[in-house]
Image (cartoon, rainbow over all chains, first blue to last red; front, side, top):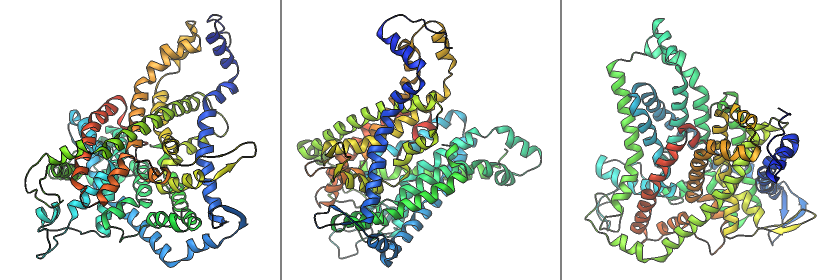
Length: 301
Length: 276
C-alpha cells in the first residue's frame, strides 16, 4: 500500500500523502477534537462536580481550599436521603420489570410471528412515540390519571382512565411507575427485537425437531441468547428512570420525592450537598453498568 | 417454532395492548387541543379552534419554538462534526485506549441527565483557571448549545460508526488503486457511503436537543426559554393547559415525518442507540 504516491501535486494530494504516511497525525486530526471536547466539557465537569462535593464552599458559593467530608457523609447517612435513594432504585427496578414484561411478547410477536411485510411498520410504530416530546407525554398521563374530584368539586368527572375504566391509580408511586414505563418502553422493545432478528430460525427448528415444546424452546434456546439484549434494554429503562425528577414532579405535584428531586431542590439551597447527592446515582449506575457488561450488554447494542 | 393458535393470538393481543398503551396518551393530547373546556377531564365537552387561534397570537410559545430550533441546529452541527470525526478515527485506527474512548463517548447518555446537568452547571458558573488560561462559561444560549452538543455527539457517532463498520475497506483500496488521493476518495466514495447515516444521525441529534429539558433548565440563562421550558412553565399556570396541548400537537405533526425519514435512512437498531 505504501507505493501509492500517485494522485497529483496539488495541496489536497500533498495533504493526503502526508496523512497516509503519518498515522499518528491523522489519528490526532480526526480524534483530537472530539476527545478534547469530551474531556474538557464532560469529564472536566464531572471532576468539578466531585470536587464540589468534597470541598468546603464559602458563602459566595466559591470552592475554598479546605476539604470536608461533611457533605458526602450527610448525603450517605441522612435517613430521608437514603429513603429517597431506595425508593428511586425500587421504582427504576419496577419500571424495568414492567417494560420487560410488555416488551418481550411484543418483540417476539413482531420478530417471529407477524408477517414479514408487517415487521418494519410495526417496529416503526413502536419507535414513533419517542418523538412526541417527553413533557407532553408526562402531562398526557397526568390528565389521563386525574381522579374524580367528588360530588362537590367544581369540575365533575375524572380523566380518561376514570371515565373509561372507572379506575385510576391517582397521582402516587404506581402512576409514576406507569408513566416512566410508558416513556422508556421502546428502548426495551428495540434491543430485544434486534436480538430475536439475529436469532437464526434454524435454532428454533432444531429445538422443535428434537422434540422441545414451544415453552421449552423459549426457556432453553431463546432466553439464553436474549440475555445481552435484555441487559442492554434494561440499561436504558433503569438509568433513565433512576435519575428522573420531572416525571415525579409532574405526576405527583412534588409529593413523591425521588433522588433527582432532592438534587434539583438542593441546587438552590446547598450546592455542595446537592453535588454530594449526585454521587448516589453515579455509584449506582456504575455498579449497574458493570453488572450488565458481565451479561455482555455492550456487545449487543 | 410452531406455536399453537392460542399462543399466537395471545402474543398478538399483548402487542395490540402495547401499541394502544403507546398511542392513547398521544391521541388524548391531540383531542384535548380541540376541547372547548379548559380542563383535562374526559370526555371533552365540545369542540373549538380557540386554543389554536390563541397559540398563533401569543408570542411566547412561538419565540420558544424558534429558540429551540436555533439551539438544536447549532448543537446538531457541532455533534455532526465531532461525532463523524470520532467515528472515522474509531473505525480506521486501532490504538491504545480505544475502548476507554468508546466509553467516554457514551457516558453522557449512560449517566442520568440530572448528573450531567448538575456537573455542567457547577462548571459553567465557576471561573475555570487552567494555569495558562482562565475563563468562565456563564449561562445563556451558548451554554445550552455546549451542553446539548456533548450528549448529541454519541448519536451522530453511533450512526456513522455503524455504517462504516458495515462498509467494506476494499472500496477505499480500490479507489486508491485507481489513483484517487485521499480527498478525492472521501468525496467520491466515503461521503456518499455515510451520507444517509449523517442525515439520520443529524435528525436524531436535533430531536434529542429539541426535546431536552433537564440539562436545559440547569444550563439556561435567566432570559432563555426553549419550547420544553415554556411547556413546563405553562402547565404550571392554571390557564395554560389547552394552548400547551396545541403546541404539543404541532410538534408531533412536525416530528412524525422527520421520524419516518430517520427510520428509512438508518437501521432501526442503530437509530435508537442514542435516543433518550
